Length: 522
Image 1 (cartoon, helix red, strand yellow):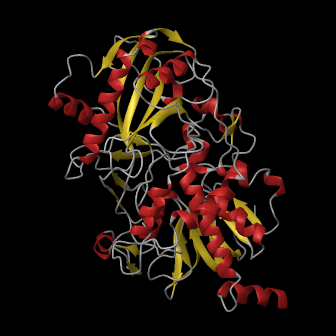
Image 2 (spheres, one colour):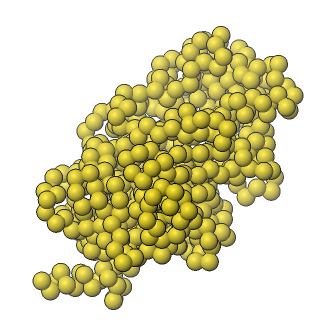
């Protein structure tokens, strides 16, 4: 670890070693455009069994989680544990390794919303580059419950689908960015082995960034828990959809009125910071199985189905995951917890979520100190047309039909929740409102948009509005939610961001190019 009493200066300073930060750091280092500091608040992940082995997720200590609490609606207090990883590799080090490539229609929508250059044709090469770096497997349906679910879905008219190749209505096994049980997170795929990192790249672990240093409208470095780190060319924030907007706001970039209320001097009035919070969230139908079945080998979710509720939807608008639950079927719903998925299961749930939810929440500061957790309001089911509620409800209605099939009837006894007495639409709606669970896919809080979009935080090159030499790159820049699990999308965004930064650095007359010439001259 360098001495923070020295003047630590790098060409590029990256804040956050998660799904995006690790990708950008490695690509910039390999391009040879300058020195890179990758600053991660958590510890290193390499060689830690519970971090490398997907099936040992339950063994991960709580010290590797930020411990955020969120409110699902304005009327409810912040009691939802909104888990975010505090470790190199970020949430890709503690997720279920679901790996789904967003359909082209998602990127077409981004472009329609003002993200020019982010359409499906432009993004394809970056997806291909990502796929050449990350190991992905689809496991066979050897578990008896998975096999029965897939057969039952086919009885109900769903097509057996290989979701590695296409995102279309159907049912199939879930592709995983894991080889066997070994995670293929951003850190594993781009940084390991850490002992052989390029000389241009230095990783700072257990180093918490508290503020971006801004001088004369330009980001020149960051303050950390160990001291300042300066940037000759750029500061790149990849701290995720909760902490990226928080870091901008404590640094004086955000809605002027909110910053003033927190006693923070306004550096740039950017009203969109922390707004537009999107998340996938679900409600589940729970069934009791005839007997306990072996735990699924790798993750609590082995298979999924995609549905089109609205025939004119550009892509599936409902995603349902099948999850084993341990617990007593005489209880209300059993105990659902990824921390216990590797025990035998007696219950199974089919959790339905709207793939492109329209409800939006926000991230707001509580104090001016980055160490204090922000207020997270998810605002589930808040869209005025009740679109999310309708899609989730239709997904649940379809899921309830599984008990009617021969294949599922062979292994399942009954519906535990909502239960056979819940039939009327109003009762189903009440059940959904009382039984919502997050999928932990926070996005959109530093959204990308065109220069004339007052709600945009970053432009199409991911540069923060009204501040030079500062970019944001993670799920927070999504203009709209993607149809599927977000990890692949985040890493794709990082690949494109890295290519953009490298191209800018190699442009004659750019700050990065000039710094490189000065370095050569010295």
